Image 1 (cartoon, rainbow, N blue to C red):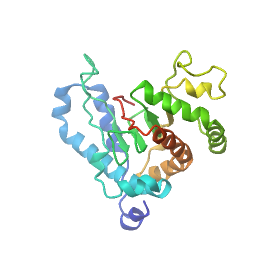
Image 2 (image 1 turned 90 degrees about the horizontal axis):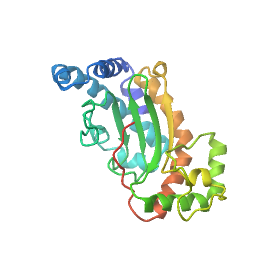
Image 3 (image 1 turned 120 degrees about the horizontal axis):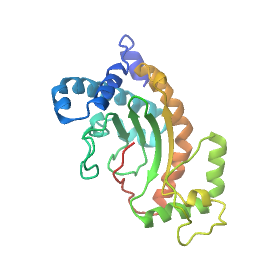
Image 4 (image 1 turned 180 degrees about the vertical axis):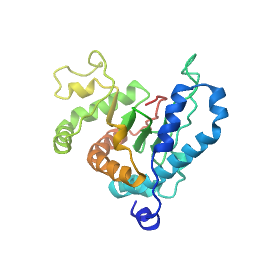
Length: 243
């Protein structure tokens, strides 16, 4: 991050082109419009890649365990395709009108747990979290949270964050409703997500400083979830989903 402050001090870049393109694609979400305006997509994509290239330095400062691993990666390795996988969106619009990235040494997995970013008008967000693709892996995380719930609660209190996720209607088999961690045991994923108003997305430098505070705040919980995932000694694979 500070590398860019030194070497790009006269270069001011912002998100206007990215947000403008996403807004247009939202209104014209079809293949004809996309291909007729592909040059505009290329320019917006270039801007987004430039931003996440800078964001790596923020993550390296605040989360050095993954920072070292991502320092020499290409930003395009973290970025998601704008085209939707139509196997999961039959009869839906063909594109996700947003620019999204999962910044981690392995974008196809949630181990090691990284940070995700979505930039789009009205639905930008940033955060970290843990998703599992099988009930067995979910139960491993649930057992870890139950066993280390004092540590979990202490992190919530010290950082003043909220952990959210999709929940089961009832307790999963093998867990007690009287467990102090019951609220989190019912979860199927565990995330810390900050939704970002459009007015808070300005220049690249300003937004890097903005996200730095969130990385610093969520890092203790990311570390806890990482220990929970590693306790199962099995790879946790990221299922397909969209933010």
